[in-house]
Length: 590
Image 1: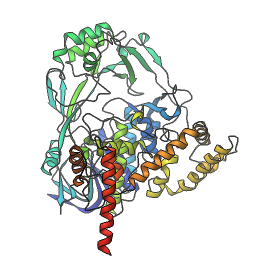
Image 2: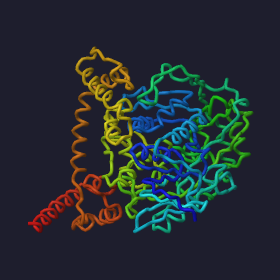
Image 3: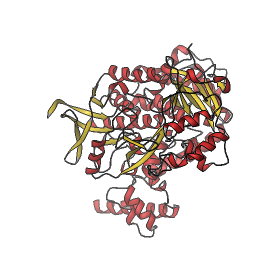
Image 4: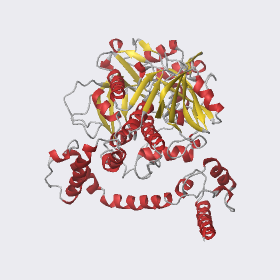
């Protein structure tokens, strides 16, 4: 076996959205980082829809951007269509979304990785995570190479144990056309981790030349549009249109006639799929009275006629997929370029992780993305950034960085995963965030860019403009007509400062109440569960609570309170016994 001579601080396995953000964050934080991925030509590939953002997802992208990540800037480079969602509601739930040229997006990420100082990128397949003294110590690859590292971040997406389904056809694959990563999945089981199965799917892609767009409602890009990154201005771009259509009564009849041929309902798939993004055959079963489900034709890029048919996710046989298309006005003659399919894959129970996304039983091993049971590029990117940063901090002997629920949607997501676990692929929604008025897309920079500067994720040159930007928002809160010097804020925008100040004035009373509630959360999270204290052994709490506390082992009283099934009475008893435990420890020291 070839052993690479240097020892890395952070080794990242997987080049999807989670892996890219993990590797970039680790290197920007000053770590010697290595990214290992099966194929460098599929780095950050948009395996599903060619878009970034959406309800709550857009907020996550803005948070990644504020934390120094690449996703928002690359989205702006690749965008062919912008749309702000939920503008009919309050600004707390406004969510930016952008269609991308998926090839520009993909290779912009590849370039960012190659250009990042302190980061090495290689094409190989990770086969084994090896341990030393019970902690992650590096990776063995398919080319019989060993790379040693102080920490390892695993981001395999849907590749672990991946099986593709198109009707009765079943084939191994992490994505159509790519082989799965079965060895690493077996390795995790050998390490004693709880590995389970999930399912997701994707629709067919069609040739735009064969679509009658006159039968669809065009959806042009927003003009003017809001860039995804805080640091970009709207610019002249070549925009493409999206199109909106609907299924018909005939679609429902096709689904009814061929229901038994779906991989999902024929019994070939047993894993749970995403409830909030069901296949078209799942919609037919669960919503039988609705015969007009919306469909969206989304362009895949500037230099292709390929369209993604959002809303038509399916695991039906290919010939049935043609029948489904023929039932939709405008798609009667559509030619399939790529069939829709479902994929089953392995994931690890996220309750095995700490709030830093580190495996509790294997120090130095971090998980991010779909391995934690999530779905979506944005959720993956947010986890990847946090795992990469925390791996870098671990390698340097520094304490982890954890975002609270009142600080970021990323904090809400990670807390949900580790305290509540999942029974289906986890997708972020604004309704999951109890402090969503604080967690708006417009103020992600105010909430998080200070952390970026603290950990080196943004250049030091951004520090002074950021202080000027915060001062500008404060001035505008007092006086909407205050004069702002744009040059002192760059790369931040005066328009952003005015918009944020206006929203905060509008919701001043509600924000004050939210801040008070958030402070109560912070106080509970400041009460650490001491080493040596076992909350599951406290007398008087429910048996179910004892079992969940023993399994999850929360780090704080606040985290214990957020575990599903733990009652306020349980928390009150635990708090009393924590105080008794501390008094006893102090008495022993005296």
